[in-house]
Length: 80
View 1 (cartoon, rainbow, N blue to C red):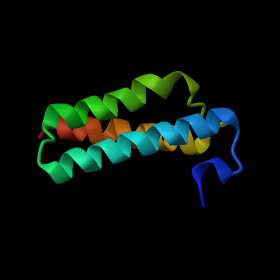
View 2 (view 1 turned 90 degrees about the horizontal axis):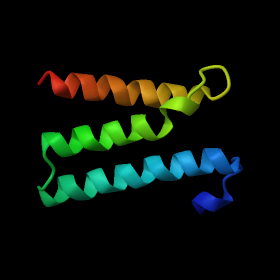
View 3 (view 1 turned 45 degrees about the vertical axis):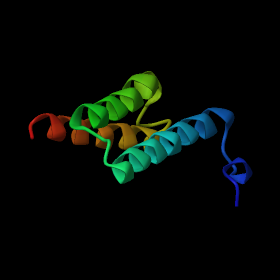
View 4 (view 1 turned 90 degrees about the vertical axis):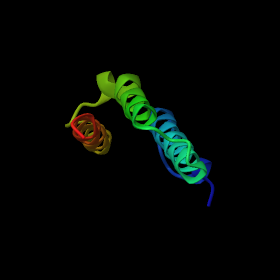
């Protein structure tokens, strides 16, 4: 199955493609041993900044939950 075959609106597809891209970049950096705390923070912040205005918990619950999760992980990593 290709991601383009999934039944999503264009906006939803853009969101999930971006999340997948960030995930793949994080995995690649982690596997190569080149990821740093600052890199992880930047990845998480990019997710929040890119989509924070379009995360209505009523209209887009999945997006809202993922953004809240990303924010919680970022805040936790900041304190480590």
